[in-house]
Amino acid sequence: MKWIYPLLANRSILWLLLVVNIAGTVYGYVWYGWQLKETPPIFLIFVPDSPTASLFFVFVLAAFLMKKNWPLIEALAMVTLFKYGIWAVVMNLLVFTVQGELDWIGVMLIFSHFAMAVQALLYAPFYRFRWWHLIVTAIWTLHNDVIDYVFFMLPRYHMLHEVTPQIGYFTFWLSVLSVGIGYYFVIRPNRFKLSI
Image 1: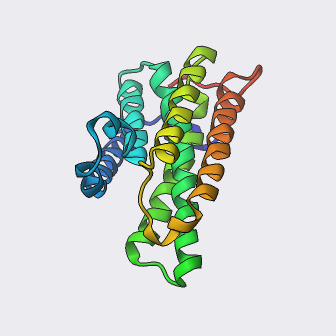
Image 2: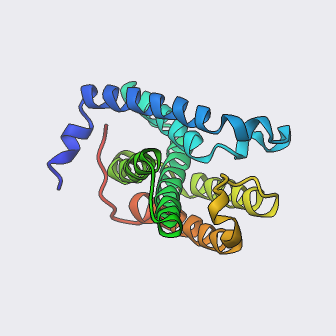
Image 3: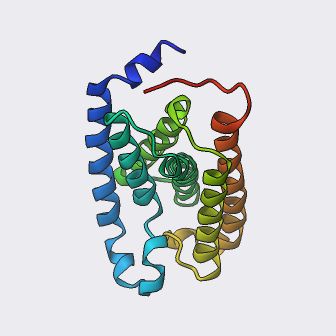
């Protein structure tokens, strides 16, 4: 598996990922457009979860291209990319379970969000965040869950409305898992570490 890391650190790959993530981020904000129009201004920053996660990663990649690390952004990117990547995969599989079918957008969302979670993990050896970065990220992430499931600013899947409390419970523990993954891959002693 270690053969992949020189490839990931290659400038051409970093540029390609930067372009792909910018495009995905823009698409994500457009996808949320109708919901953002109905969102009270105080909650706007917390509604577009996945595109904000990929926006964090855009900044991580930009820093890598400058041979720099921006630890807080790395922590935010890793935790939120993994969390919302897995969350969207599970939600779209639930839609398929409820409806018995999934349109091409749902299939695209499964693959693109799974890729978000994977890239968060693949770049972990290059991250340099510490405890305080992860604590700030945990606060951001859990606060976002409160905004989503107490004030109901979550992404709207009308066919899953009846199981919103269960989705909220799952999301809380997914947040905890995502923060734990940040610790395991980046902060724990003797972790695998590389320079970009």
